[in-house]
Image (tube, rainbow, N blue to C red; front, top):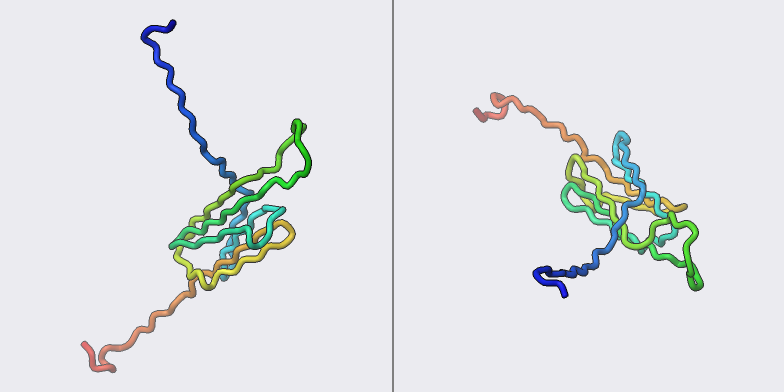
Length: 128
C-alpha cells in the first residue's frame, strides 16, 4: 500500500494538425500561395481570408483498403491540416482566386493597386 503518494491520471485528446509544404512568392501584381497536397478534391479545402491572414485548412483521409496489421513505412500525412500565411497588407477576398490541379492548391491574391494622390493648387480652386 502506498501512503502519502497520489497518482493522477490525465487523459486528453488533442487532434494532431499538420502543415503541408507551402511556397509563398510575389509577382509584380500578386502574391501566390502554392500548397502541395495530393489526394484531395476542390471541395475538401477551407480557404479563409481574415484581414491580413490567409488560412488554408482541410482534412486528408487515409483511403488505404483492407485491414492494416502493421505499417512498414509511413511518411504521408493524413488527418487535419492547416497552414497560415501572414500578408503585408489587407486584400479584398472577392478578388482572390484558387485552383487545384495535379496535387497543388494555388491561391492567387492580387496586390492592392497603387493610388496616385492628385495635388491641386489651392489658389486655383479658391480654397486656402
